[in-house]
Image (cartoon, rainbow, N blue to C red; front, side, top):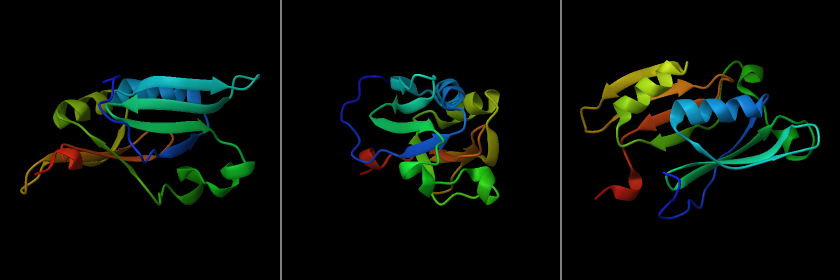
Length: 141
């Protein structure tokens, strides 16, 4: 998955209290791969890029300066989110089992949909909401 056919033109950006732990978990649970991780002189993640197929997310440690002052963590807003990242998975059931085994908090259990496809939703260890499904808008007739 590390050689994308095309690059995504929209890249979600996320903040974590422990970005190093989040990076490790996202790679283990969802199959992301590290593309770049930049730290300050104290080891805090200032900017990281993780790839999944042709997609990417960027993340960093939480900070209250600059752009960070405009963002809240899920536990600060009663676990609510105003957005959610969607991951396409060709073997959605295997993805679900991998995420569950890594400790993802499942909020919508894996299900085959009547209209085709499959999917599930979960939270990562810091409460961010993720949706995963077999629907791939790049390959829809």
